[in-house]
Amino acid sequence: MATHLITGSGSGIGEAVARRLHERGDELWLVARDAGRAKELAARFPGARTLVADLENPDRLSWALGHQELPDRLDSLLHVAGVADLGAVGELTTKTWNRTLAVNLVAPAELTRLLLPQLRVSKGHVVFVNSGAGLRANPQWGAYAASKHGLKALADSLRAEEHTNGVRVTSVYPGRVATPMQVRVRQQEGAAYDGEKWIDPQSVAATMLLALDLPRDAEVHDLSVRPGYSGS
Image (cartoon, rainbow, N blue to C red):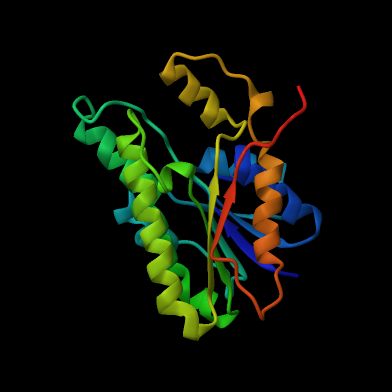
């Protein structure tokens, strides 16, 4: 039985991959922003362990995890949580920049640092759910794209540093996914939400499992996932 620690398991891609891993009997450690959310996740995934840690405050993650029981080993660390606040560079406030970078980049870096000992023990796997915005930046997406470009750099550096320790690192770059976050994005764009046009979270979860389940003689570095033809 493999052990996985997951951020963002409350909805969307994170919930989809947590559900798949839970159904096959793996051990889950789920990060929640507060005790109430942790209780909800524990009820949704019976047998899963929860950790309370606010990704918006990366400076406190070491303290928060230091006061909770952690797994002795980790087969995977799945960074799925993220935020997206759109706006032109000339209009974005430092509050938006700081929150976006904290959740999307600094918190994953700090969580990875704190959990590397457990990942090294099991020669585990770190998966970063990035975005198409991590490969290109469009108008109004400056803060989000900057955080995701940084996440790519983090993953690439980590892969090179931890290769000799047997730790694998994969970045997944989905296009638009039918998630609650996408609903909020479409509201910010002033456009209608039509989930049938975009990728099902289960499809992204399937690509993550493809990377996780690959035999030890190979490693997937980057996976781009784009909406397919629905036939409609």
